[in-house]
Length: 270
Image (cartoon, rainbow, N blue to C red; front, side, top):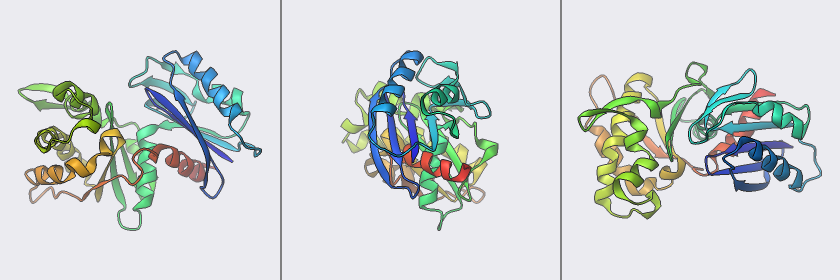
């Protein structure tokens, strides 16, 4: 049995998979702001989940920078944790089994890319939630050259000033500018205005990476049907003979991409 752990700024999701990828059970809890309390909650959740099968491997996806060799979370986007020994702490809970620590956007991107691998080989995945994360997957593998990329931190000129992309195009930015969560926005004029900033960053990434397709996921991505057509239209304005815009599609599992990506990464790694 494989365990997947998706650590979020507000909630943590744990899932058990069998070796063929069947989701056996899952559980979630509010992510404590204190790391030691988080480890205690994680221990309790893992030990109280039903199942008589032994955990044979774990993948823990975190929202931040990772020291993969040592299994350490170096920094976290919306959690005040720094240099925390994620792998060692998990080993104290599950024993000496293979434990992978990876960035959550990269893991989610892997999951979504494998769903479209027959058609697209170079996949740019963007998770738009509180912030903006990215994953670049080539031939079904997380591109090691961009394993630490942080697209949301790109500095772009926006409204006559230099700003980080996620400061004007993320879910947090939507709430700040429009006073509503993405789930609450039904006004097409708001979505049309929002995608202008989103398209700006996407254009920069397309010109550099030349992906075959862009997949939009995350909390905001859940509402792709409300803004996707506006985004495609906006991106056409950036297109030129040197930079052709690839298809833009919605994630197939916007809320579950991370845990399924954890399963896929375990399969690739052990």
